[in-house]
Amino acid sequence: MMETATVPVSTIKRGGRPDGEGSVQVQMDPSLKIGTAKVFAVYGKGGIGKSTTSSNLSVAFSKMGKRVLQIGCDPKHDSTFTLTKKLMPTVIDALEAVDFHAEELRLEDFVFKGYNGVMCVEAGGPPAGTGCGGYVVGQTVKLLKEHHLLEDTDVVIFDVLGDVVCGGFAAPLQHADRALIVTANDFDSIFAMNRIVQAIGAKSKNYNVRLGGVIANRSDATDQIDKFNAVTGLKTMAHFPMLDEIRRSRLSKSTLFELEATPAVKAVQDEYMRLAAALWLGGDPLPAVPMKDRDIFDLLGFD
Image (cartoon, rainbow, N blue to C red; front, top):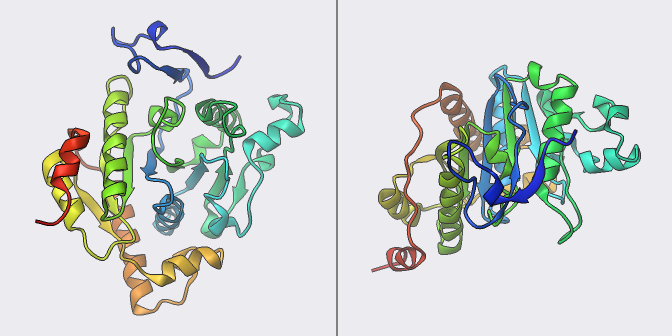
């Protein structure tokens, strides 16, 4: 039986409230909980560095001795290549190879070991404009549970594509404990972050996910992020500057932990280790309140 289905929102009720307003949603089978692992979903504007952040955070957790699973949720299937050193087949690829007879799949058909033991999965997705990414995320979690991989995992990181624009893209929020938002110190990134805060707020009414915090990326200054955080109630958990070594790590198909530990690189490695330690310890969720679009326009910028 399929784990997810796309149905009108008017038919979905939890606690007397619909899961989404006036939209089509992907509903999670409540019997398919991930389990005891700490689950993080990494969101942010397209191209902001979510995959770089996710992969290096995965390595940081692994260096703490944690068993880590990273799930890429983008049809580009490029979330984990710095861990595996090449683009790996996706769950969709694996399913197509067995004519979608999921019972014929082996774990090694879609789960691959990356740097420092991080387990890597690329969910993949339908061709553009032809299907729902949320369905693919649901099928991926179902397969991982059927093969008992999640029972041996301490940390699961969902690396989610681009901006939240539909219920499908928000599907990882149904599984996550905390959502992390990657942003730069600019208007477009912060505007996208505000939409993500709205999506997390909507999902938190029916699921356990809560806001974990903000990761400032590719930014030497954080003044605009600080303005937004002060108004909405968000908090910056980590700050990664505009550093060419970060760009070059992607081009060399490596994580930052594999580069020569120059002072600049060592500082970034230490920041990832500090972030992983803070996330593992946990903390109170952030009750952030999103802003109106025009209010953001008035807030950001120079006096």
